[in-house]
Structure formats: C-alpha cells, structure tokens
Length: 158
Image (cartoon, rainbow, N blue to C red; front, top):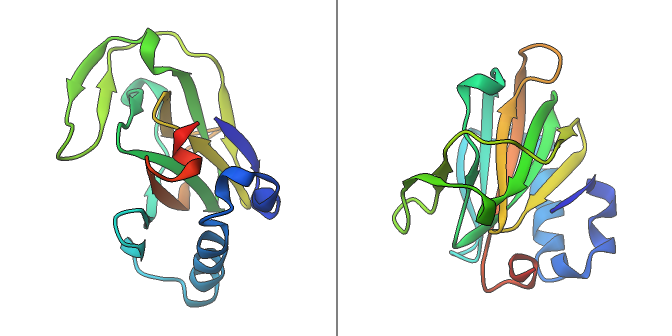
C-alpha cells in the first residue's frame, strides 16, 4: 500500500512504466471533465474508471481486494476514508473472480485508514484489502479516478 500526493508519483519506480499515462489522463480529466466510465490507457494492462458518487457509512461497506489488478485510487474532488487490512488475514465472503476480479470479505477489524483528499492517491496491491467510498466527517459527493494496473506491471507485483 502507498498513500501520497499525486505530484510525488514519479518518486516510486514501481510506476515508471505507467506514470506518464496516469498523469496525462488526470490532466485530461481536469480539463475536459470526462464522463463517468471506463477508459483504456494501455489495453488490459492499464485502464481508468472515472467515478462520481456519495460517500457512505462504514457499516454499509465491505473490505475488498483483487487478484488480477492493483488499484491506484486518485481523488479529484472531495474526500473519503479508505480502510485497509491484510487480505490473507480475512475470511472471504464472496469471490467474484475471475470475471469481475473482486473478492469481498466478512466483517473484521482493520489496520487503519487513509483519508484521500483532493490531489492524493492510495495504491492497493492485490494483497491489500481495502474498503473505499467511506465518509470522512460527513457524507459528500466525490469524483475519483481508479486506475486498474494489471498484475504483470511492476507496480502490481509488490
């Protein structure tokens, strides 16, 4: 797991392969305010999901992880908490792999959280269970880009 400001993305050699594509897409979204949806950046190796939604209460969410893709979640507008835990210490409740590449876990403790604010990102590798979309102080509308990085990319092999 990595939590940082997007301007520091180049400091991580793990993102050297896709850093420019990620930064360019963020710039494009800021200038064009792209529609919600999926955008191919490097075929199945890297794509972006532009999302807008209202954050929710922690009790209304579940920990999740992925097998094929790592998530780089960039907060463009608003703020939210993302709780984190170790996937190998949780009990799987629902496995939607390989079709949807998502596993949901039964309720358990957590190992803390990140607060994504405008301009920050969280990186969650396949071993990092995470619970995104949670209100920080109060529910609010957010705009976020989730970059899905395939497991054969250096950033997803951590």
